[in-house]
Amino acid sequence: MNIHDVRRGAFAAALFLGLALGFAVPGASPARAEEIEVKIDNFTFAPRTLTVKAGTTVTWINEDDIPHTVVSTGHFRSKPLDTGDKFTFTFTTAGSFQYFCSLHPHMQASITVEATTGSLNSQ
Ligand SMILES: [Cu+2]
Image 1 (spheres, protein in one colour):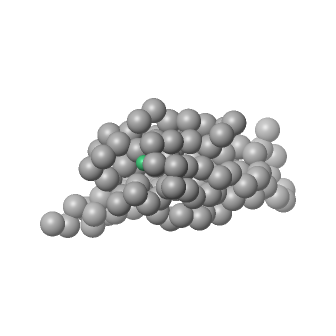
Image 2 (spheres, rainbow, N blue to C red; image 1 turned 90 degrees about the horizontal axis):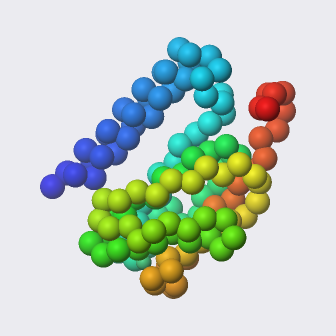
Image 3 (tube, rainbow, N blue to C red; image 1 turned 30 degrees about the vertical axis):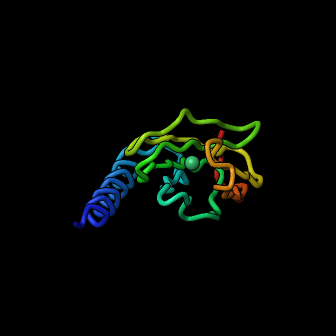
């Protein structure tokens, strides 16, 4: 039962491929763009706290056997995610984003988004 290992490997491969393509096609995507995965399992967001750079796309994947949602009041709200469903949000502004599951409000987590600093002209 190594489904998690398989997924992790596939994600790493996809990430590597994405990076390779990003380098191969300059300008196709922001140089600092990152993709982060948050798993939902056993009524928990994992990782529960996360710090990312502005421009990062976060994908939540429900690996639990019941539906969950991902809601950050005023920012984003997923539909109920069944097992295996994903929700994606790209954080473009710095700040602290608390979020929760509207079906199980005790499920809470947060993402801190740092401004990208320095030389890049990310217009
Ligand atoms: Cu839930």
